[in-house]
Image (cartoon, rainbow, N blue to C red; front, side, top):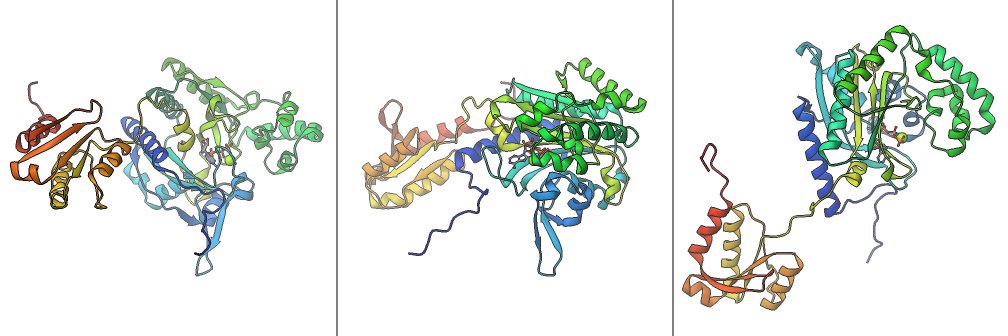
Amino acid sequence: MSRLIKAIRGFRDIPAEEAYILRHVEDRTREHFELFGYREIRLPIVEATELFARGIGESTDIVEKEMYTFQDRNGASITLRPEGTASAVRAYLEGGWKAQGGIAKIFYTGPMFRYERPQKGRYRQFYQIGLEAIGGEGPLVDAEVLDLLYRLFVRLGVEDVRILVNSLGCVECRPSYRDALTGFLGKVAGALCSNCVRRIQSNPLRVLDCKVPSCREALRGAPAVLDYLCKACDAHFTRVRQTLKELEVPFEVDHGIVRGLDYYNRTAFEAVCERLGAQNAVAAGGRYDGLAREIGGDTPGIGFAIGLERLALIIERGGLRLPVPHFFVAAATGSARVPAQALADRIRGMGLIVETDLEDRSLKAQLRSADRAGATRVIILGDEELGSGQLQVKDFSTGEQRAVDSKVFLAALEKETMPPVKGAVP
Ligand code: ATP
Ligand code: MG
């Protein structure tokens, strides 16, 4: 036998139980986004590297060290998408969606790829569902996006997520804040981690986001961006907060929230849940009015992305479990094998999950595997039943077994599983 081939480090297989929960979370989130008029689009998984290397700004974590970049057969540099926002804005510009007028309200879901150090809650391939409102610049857009995010957690039964918001200012007011922050960081540089020391020049705002405890400590007296907002940014942020209050959306202003990417401006936010441990952000987003200009257009936008694995960890799972077969159809004799499969097909036609034996096993072995599969009822078919038009139905929960007329049984089952007729009076 040859050596067992394994998955690449940081990439993992998602077993059925977890895939089922991820699907549930994704489906509920989709439905929720659609209630606000957002529509799903599909985006490519690979893009030209320059979309991220230019679009994201040269000095972000993603560009510096996290991108999966390859050369294709023609020598072109391509990158597995590390996030969806740049692609969404590219699609908006390339597709001329501006012509449709108004705000483009879109969302997408799928795998993202980042060359990060794998650890709990952090993978090299992970799943996001992202939402973008492209084309609107007013504070009401920001407030609706945050309202939508908050109500998603409510809908999923998550009560302990906190929404943290901040304003990053704009091209007018950020430079003076950046100067003040760089000055402060220079003074405390000795207490910062090596990543942060490097970021003092390249990306000082990102230092505020460092999770290293000694950095957090050193940053205590750091100047707050909110004290440097220009009049327009201040008015925008005030209106966002006021609207959220009126909509009864709980939030906290946290001037440590930054996006680290130069094109982000004004409203920035994160949703955090302490149950997630060190990687506590379940969603992050913000306004990116400068992004389109970096990729050949000009249009404001705001959006966020949710980490689906992390969301799946914190939702109220209730009775959420992989579906089990409604029936197992067992064949007691060789001649009943194919009729058992035909019967299974008939019941599957009613939308029920049915399994059969495909390995010519004894009746006893079939009953065992039915039980193991979690089937609640077994139908047993043998020569006698085939002759008399009957079925043996065994209920695992009560242990009871009885003979029933096949036609009567199927008719009753059909009635049970029939979808209600639309408009019928109950
Ligand atoms: P972090 O500070 O945790 O690195 P980020 O700022 O890189 O997060 P975003 O790019 O804003 O995160 O992505 C949004 C969400 O995607 C995060 O809040 C998180 O839930 C999820 N996420 C990001 N990177 C990973 C990863 N490597 N593995 C799993 N989930 C991730
Ligand atoms: Mg990251």
